[in-house]
Length: 438
Image (cartoon, rainbow, N blue to C red; front, side, top):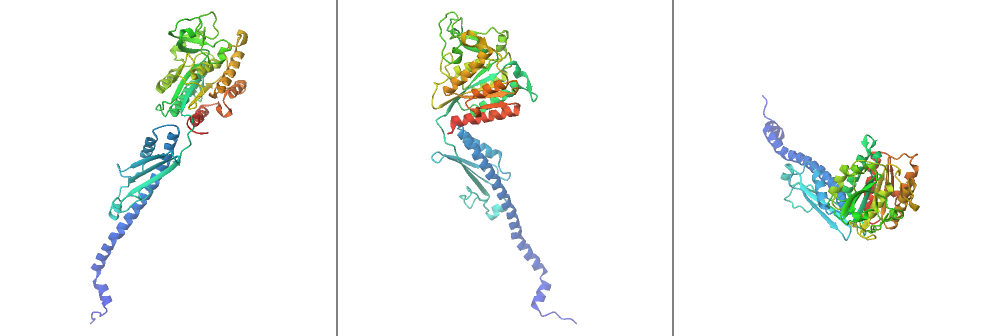
């Protein structure tokens, strides 16, 4: 007969199966907690990485808004982070701070929040991060991120007066890439207005419009129009002033004499009646950016091309000389004055030259003279050719390039993508001159 073993270890192993199960069950609790906590730590690490990426981008966006003179840089940063939050972040826990250090020329964006947690709460886990390091130990799951960006140095320019001289001749009705050219032009122009005015909130920037074809339609006191004597306003389609007054921005004489060369003449074009119908009117410098964009959206091509006349009126818009007095005095250190000329064709309408000659060649010479006069007066001249025939219009391209304030301010664009890209560069160029040191 077998007897019970006297070995204690062997007896324990034989008789304690229930004990082993209980011990294993107890030891599994911390194992599961540790596994869960590891998963949540990875979750928080991922959330922190996503938060850092959002804060980095938000800081750059805020710096860009601040550099362009905008006052909404804090909202810009917060909105950007709101739209790029980590998916694991607990709703209502986001805290964003934006600080500008003008002495050090820095902008700092920081954000913190709490990641949804179960195991982390039990184990009092902190996700960490630059701004979570100060979180008390009773706030598990807290993550944070920060980014500091250097700001460009501001220059003396803080304001802008920009005259947009836009071609509304018949050829702008043609299509490029399946889109009417005047539509592509207006979209680029509207985006430029939005960008430089921070979507209309920056009232330190004024825009004026000079839509031109063979004539320009203006509203001004009647006695600035040849043959009129009243000081009340009238609206006319005009031709250029007589030489040499069509090359300058002096105030016309109000004397009602025969053939007053300082005044504008009334156009005899048969198409003039349609200028009102298609809203092809000069708009003086204004901070009413909504109305400027609204007019761009309603204008329609008509007539031939008189570039010189458009530039002549733009020069008047940028000076404080009557009939347009919305501009500040020339040479103000805090105000950039600029003209942006966009055309898709060569000069086809005649203008007045020496000895009363009325020719296309005289109009071309007048354009060159006006560009030189404006540049000498401190106006930044930007020119854009759109869908010009490189062979047939080579001379026109050369004139537009020579008209610009430098080679970098002339843009020869052949399609809608190039046009949009050109206006993007123009925006950066003017913003840099207006707000940043060069």
